[in-house]
Image (cartoon, rainbow, N blue to C red; front, top):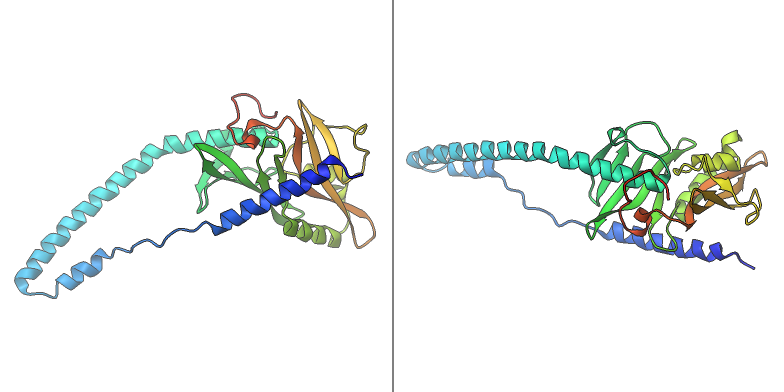
Length: 270
């Protein structure tokens, strides 16, 4: 009889596939290029009196441009505080999602074509987290990290009953192939796979009464939350089993950010 989380896997993967498709279809209209220099050069081909007017117009334009640049600089300076506040907010949300305390000074915010990226400036379990704003709330979209020297991106699925962080099928296959080709190491054990996930499960307690050990899906208790970690095994070239850090989702106790809401102030974790 299939376990209840088998159907949850399918639901999450389908939701993530839709999310990725929506992101890929997002486009931006082509902007209009304004070539002031060309306009000035075209005007200078007129009569001498027209030429004098042109230079006066060009000088006025230059003054306007300089003033505009000054205003842009002031605007950029004034936005520093807002950027710092956003970095602190996103760092708190990522901390609640990954069960980790993340100081705002260890991250930076980067604007992207599809949203805002929080970049980890120090060595850690994750490299970047992509956010997009929905209804005034910054929602996580994906988490990138490095596993066995390979860059991988986990897709984030939000929801009150099926929130999770999983590798897309193509990324999972690519990571399985890489781990199968590498010499076996302790990092390839199931505990090693858990430690390779972006989430910190160091304090998690396996619920072996519910899920036997060495299974692909391991249910663990982490504080008030229960998390189903996905660590699928793959055979290496030498016949040993290497566990792949496929992802996880919350069985119960998902943090508010995973339900499309900002995390409350306080320590990370559910």
